[in-house]
Length: 181
Ligand SMILES: [Fe+2]
Ligand SMILES: [Fe+2]
Image 1 (tube, rainbow, N blue to C red):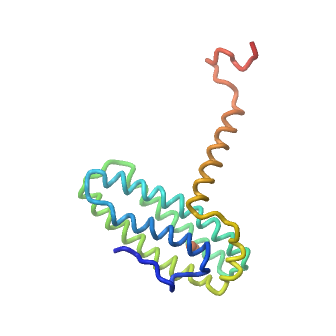
Image 2 (cartoon, rainbow, N blue to C red; image 1 turned 45 degrees about the vertical axis):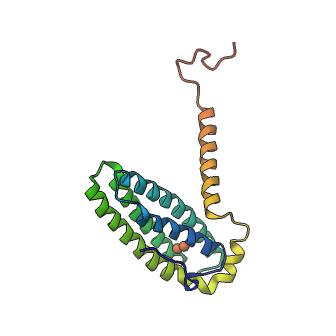
């Protein structure tokens, strides 16, 4: 069942809500995949994306909470960690090939887990931040939209990898062997 955003789900009318809309859109995608032979691959891509997006959202939400002196920041962080583990458990189902019948059952399971999470976390737990909305909005000022933050994070990781690779000594079979000719 598609989750439709409604005003009561809003927290800050700003970046926090934009992040949550983005995550809800990803959750909704799970139900749109048709039961064909590509089901496993398509769900795997959605879950991988959701892991990345959720991780970046959690990091910044926790930062905004600390900046707003949110009383339940530590307990809230534990919710994030727990959900991260749930997503990792789901992604482990994709490590081996599954029959279409198994995948259809798994799709229903994933959909249920994610819908429960939207209600329990985004609506209920995140909803406790509403009294801190003004400060959170100030803390989030100038933050990039979630999709852009994910893109920048991937670019940063890539450049760090390249920099680390550049520092390595050349492989032994390199004809130049690291020396100028
Ligand atoms: Fe959140
Ligand atoms: Fe949260």
